[in-house]
Amino acid sequence: MTLFEAVRVYVERKRSFGLGYQTPQRQLLSLAKDLGDIPVNSIVPRQVLSHLNGTQSSAATWRGKYLLLKNFFEYWAARGEGITSPMPPIRPAEPLTFIPYIYSKRELCSLLRATGDCQKWVSCSIDGTTFRMVLLLLYSTGMLTGEAVRLARQDVDGKAGFLTVRGGRFGRSRRIPIGPDLQHRVQRYMRRTSGRKNLAGNFFTNKDGTPIKPRILGKCFERLRRLAGVLRYDGASYQARMHDLRHTFAVHRITAWFRQDADMNRMLPALAAYMGQVGLGSAERYLSLTPERFRRELVKLSPERRKKRWRDDPALMKFLAEL
Image (cartoon, rainbow, N blue to C red; front, side, top):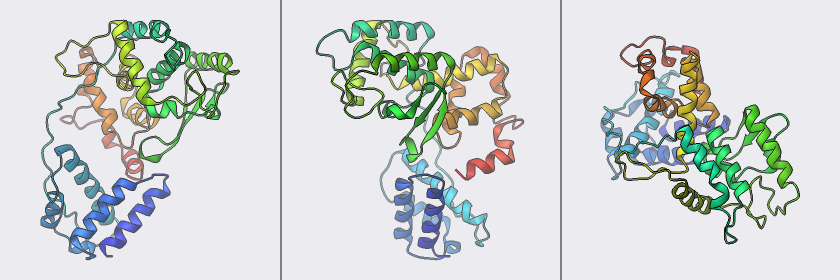
């Protein structure tokens, strides 16, 4: 099989699972253009390394392209194309330079209490009730800000307790359950806003019925954070962000599972799927952000032990490989 044909078949397979896959397709086609339409089993590590180093990019971008090509070649190697993976050694990962901020329960309460005062001015396009509901939804589900503001009213099933999240990362949609407390608040919000002007059918709108813009929402949050007195003192160059509500959701959820002695080998994949992530890398990194008192439990999942970890479950790994 030639390289262009292998790329075409691989991309079509990914899209059959509901993935948009535009950026990975461009990266794979770039490899094919660099190397030419040669047989897949004739590619050697030197050629792959030359392609990866052909353009200046950050270490994170380089590693992302590397992992994409690694998965691509391993896919064909596993299907009897007579090749071994032609991947060169991977670059070492750079030290993490940015650590998300994890809000405490007290800080979350302070933020929610201050939403009314934050949006009390006539010039504010978003009213306090809507702003508070947005923040509750972000923290309670770990949704991305863009996913929240794009929610349509028909995507919210308050009675059954489900949200349909459309057009998130990787172009995938997902239907997620919500807890009874959030379900009650969603129903109450729907009743309070049922008579409002709504020009686009969005679940969240500005006072004039137009869709909320994430940029404006971010500015409102910066004002809210200062008003609530939530400041970061750990030496980081960035203050806490609205996006950190997503990280806080994940860490608080993992912390609760540790307290309940839940099976993390099963719960981490569930968390990744709930948050719309592909693979477990993002979900797994939240383990390092959990409180220090859970370090003993984390050792059980450490790479040194290599026992009773999600990576050792063949059925789970097969499922993840097909995402």
